[in-house]
Image (tube, rainbow, N blue to C red; front, side, top):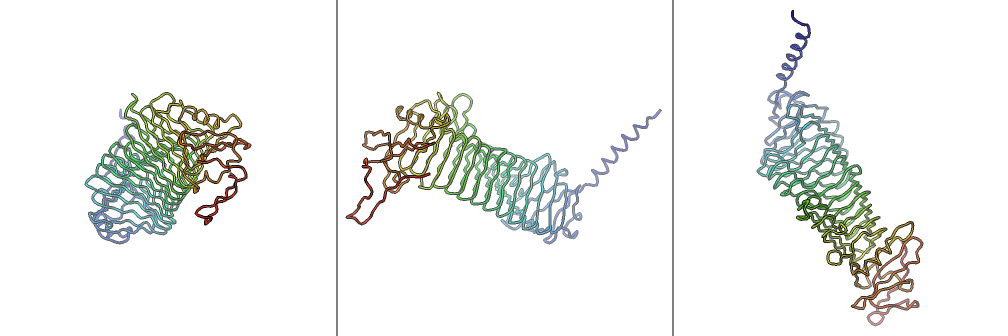
Length: 472
């Protein structure tokens, strides 16, 4: 007796086979509109088809288009192979006909432009590859004002060795719901540039995902949101530069995994890290080959939950503040992993460094906090121990100082307000004003001044300097 279920099963298998056989790869062969069937060798691709574009052609999308995969290979001539998603147009691909992948740039250079009023959405079980297949191939994804990009799969910029991947956001919105890997393979290079608009990273933003890769994050304006994830200079040689705009992150690791080298340069804008900012985070698990992280601030406003300057054994963390208007606040400052061999160096050339608590083992051979023309703002209420911690570091010769001159933030404070002081072997005095309600201030001067000092005549009276009380 033949069971009815056998017919059902056979029917399902046959139906699936027919559906699979109907899926085609259609190649875009001449410039023009995406919806013109004459521009494709197998007609306009649909939801179960693979769209393939290569050579020096430009495809314009002005309507709603859904495909089963995008294989945008490109051309050897830079800027000659382009997809424009224009006003009223959208491109959606789930990668089902391309092993779960979507690709921009694998046979030369390919450029995807998402223009005003256009959108692109990529998903799938595989990778959104921007720059793939080696030999210097490159992919470019540009999101302009009014344009929108949404990617739900892992994104790799520079997916294979010797490839290049670029994402440029200039007024549009880009949302990555999975990890964004900037520089994925050995000898690959990835760059994310935010000039204006919004970059949302729901997954981690991983700058370099290979020890031999390089990657860059450039924030020149706009807003970067990574509040549920982390920004990582992860595994190779990577950099973060911020000249304007806003970065909002949960955690940030500048030099994350063993052997990685991370650099962050901030010359403007705002940066809020609610959790940990780690400069040199991990070693190899055996106290060697530690990561290295550098933060240089010459302007801008940054707040951090916990600032780790060197974390695990053999890691190196370096922080430099300069510029009178520079502001950095750390609720907790950790100078190395207490008890471990960590190289931690902080130089406050100028600006304001606000600290609520300092964690340190007082090892002056590996830890240094050097105050020059800047000001330490140290919390001393509600259980915060910033001021007491700083005094302990003076005794341990970890906190040292010199004086940089009149054109610094330290020069705006009045020594008449100081109620504690320490003088080093060079005759430079570190002053502390502990009368504030919530904070104490520390700064360095060369020559103590009387309380009545108001004016300094320089160069025969040609220049007058007026000393005032520092207010925050």
